[in-house]
Amino acid sequence: MNIKRYIVKDMHEALVLIKQDLGSEAIIVSSHRVKEKGIRGWFKPTRLEVTAVLEQNEIDQMKQEIGQIKQVLAQFTQNIIMTRTKDGETEAVPTPESEIRQKMRAIELDPQVIDILLTDLDVSSDENILRAELQARLEAFFKPVMPRNRETKAMAFVGPTGVGKTTTLAKIGAIYSLLNSFNIGFVTIDTYRVGAVEQIKIYGEIIGASVDIVMTPEELRKAVERNSDKDLLLIDTTGRPSHNRYQLGELKAFLDVLEAVDVCLVINATTKNQDMLKIIDDYKITAYSQIIITKIDETIAPGSLANAALYGQLPITYITNGQDVPDDIEEANPTMLAGYVLRGLGF
Image 1 (tube, rainbow, N blue to C red):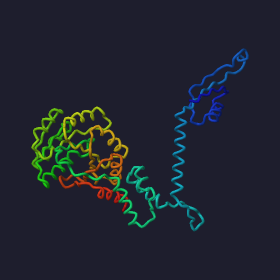
Image 2: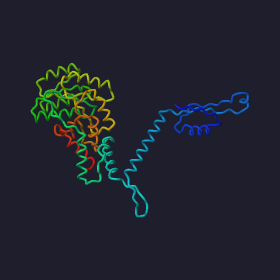
Image 3: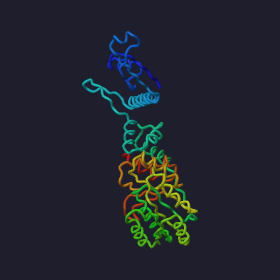
Image 4: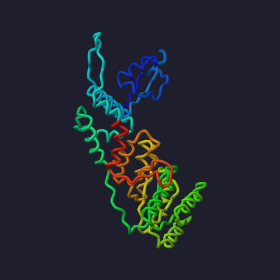
């Protein structure tokens, strides 16, 4: 911390000296009138004593901001070409790289994803060649989905409120029931949301699945035991905000009573990137092993798919694209997921 004291005739003089010595980011912490020491001081006008401070973290922030400005200017100059118009004026024309970078930002691809995709990429090549290269690079973001372990008979769906966990559970239950002839059981611990229990009961009736409603981890353990004859048990949970560590701890207490379970983190495709990254990080307490992206039909920014894959480092197993049960759901794979992102880019 840099501290300086000034004895001046007025505040204007103080401000000039402070800016000269410490810069415009300095802070005035005190000012008061003082007399010169000694007998002479009794016969002279009072002076103004001003104390100013420039904290080190402010210096560091200034350096960081200057570095960011330099970086932006460097990117700007690299991504434009200057042309001369007919009347002799010059104007900046975006380069192919700047144009595709702008498209990537528009679909909310994370900056790190953009840098990886554009590194050593010849953006001036034929459109078909460029599309094929981007397709390959995007596919590399998405981990392949492993065949489901049939010995793990339970799937639990976790995530924030309103992402579509119950509807997704019903869609997956319908797929396994109708296409694979599985004997399905539903269990819900979501007793807080109005209508949640009735909703899952209706889905159970439609596909012929049993429905258990539990209030405690012990009740969940007993429900799993009762349904040991089921081919697949799908467990619905209460939506929890990712920043609420207490509520996530409660959720973990339920999951801990399950000996073998695939935990699926459900995320809405319209979630802002920073919020998505926080959800992915905070929900690690549940030991989820896969990600499901819902409501892809409600976003014009499918970059969230690549962002989730990069920061989650887990397979995205399903995409949902509507409310209809069981139709509006797709089993995901790297080729399909990359295709969603490319269509968002206009390829």
